[in-house]
Length: 167
Image (cartoon, rainbow, N blue to C red):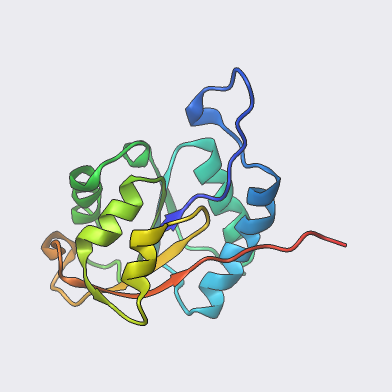
């Protein structure tokens, strides 16, 4: 799960169309590098259609030689846990690693719902805050995405990459 990078709040711009802010533009490429370093390259990306999520994914994926297929998904925008689980349950069985690019509070709540346990206190960290650009990595062993259920995953890490201001 990837929460979009920090967005801007321009006056008169619809929430769905809000762009990334300066920090988000710096952090999004760092997200791509962090996913590579963690060995968490997805087979499929479901990305919210909101501008800030799409742009986060574009900048993150630009850090890879060949990005995975991405499917824009309008249902990720404003989704709650049951809606997010419905999306995940629709994922084809050939997909081994899935990345959701979306929003809070839905993604944070989904991580907390799915993770029965975590490594290195990552679950407590998510309970405290799931900040912009955060990546929650969950491991799960099941026969197919429809079997993913609350409490059946292990939160293996919480990564919060931050970009640096160019000099």
